Length: 106
Image (cartoon, rainbow, N blue to C red):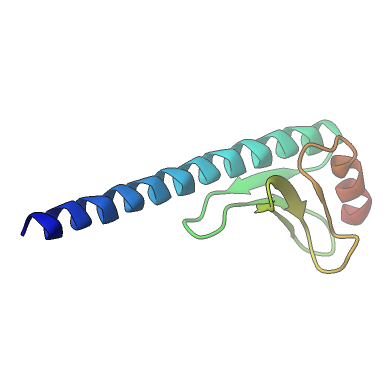
């Protein structure tokens, strides 16, 4: 029975670490989205942040319909993605990403 408890405790500790990492990722995602929202607002765009349980995103309002921007971790860095294709993403810490999104939103 002692073996079961120690194994069970190890599993729970591993699960706690995974939950902490997931929570940390959610916090980083939120921070990146809020920073981008502020940058886009300063560029004159109307934006909001949706905090769904599954995938929070930044919504840029435009005549062609809303443009959704997500933040995700790729390898060990954060990126923004908006749409499909090679040109529809950029590093979260790149100051030019807001300008690229503004061009798409026009």
